[in-house]
Length: 394
Image 1 (spheres, rainbow, N blue to C red):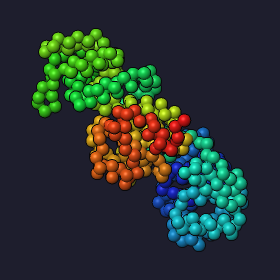
Image 2 (cartoon, rainbow, N blue to C red; image 1 turned 90 degrees about the vertical axis):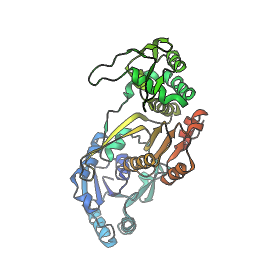
Image 3 (cartoon, helix red, strand yellow; image 1 turned 90 degrees about the horizontal axis):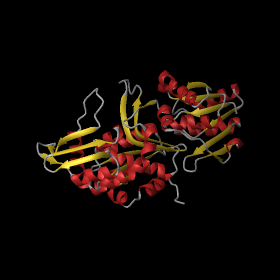
């Protein structure tokens, strides 16, 4: 097979997976008018293949979504010009699939499909090269963004440095569980005594008042037990508390400073480590920031995904909430999953609260798995991730 015919699909991965697996010399896409005329959309596919290390010839041919006879004639014309062609019937509209069946029978060309559930290619007619063939591709987080026309940007976390802190993450999360009810006030206190100054290197050595202004005009006193716990796990050093008067300490480094000044960092770090501990993902990113390129003619949109991981050709999108689960968060997560993952992609929302029935119902409607405080406290996060990805514990 030197020529692959693809039935263009709204699910991005359907347009690139078979091509990336078999690497033909040329790919011919039968696509709707808006794609056939959209050079930027075509450029996205070219750029993705180039990023993957190869540059096939690409052709985009306008095809009717409903005129079966016309689609069959187009397929026959292609097969006459490229008799070595094969047809992927994984994606496409119902009419295109019906036409593909007629064409395969009439022209006696090779036809195959891909099963997401089994992650295998299957021979439909004359495609022995795809007969029960496992898909051994592995995509990165960046790959999924690129194939959908997005760009991975630097996030709040330098993922390259997280390896140095893996031994600290579980003790940090244990601190959170112990002080969960007061966590917001504890972090607010840390923010008040270590203010951020734009454009300047933040100081590591801190000396502040024992009580500071709260969010709503009240006063927040230093949580001495929490501060001593932070010192025990090595996030702060040289702690000195003069009860009722002052507090001084030194942050271990800029990263621990940032994590102790952000309410949600502790959960995001814990989820990141759980993805590592699961041992099933080939790529994991904490704070994955994606720019949607040229969305509906309105320039670009930027979103952040708290954690994202990939297992072969299957991505998982994870939202972390140190609060109740709201409908808006579920809707946003579903949109990101569908836009950059497509059918088969997984979405999970992890909350340190307890999910109510209404939120669980909405999550179920959107196909989003929910992991709440009960499972976090029982240490079930790694197991749940494996279950969601349909991987059995060994």
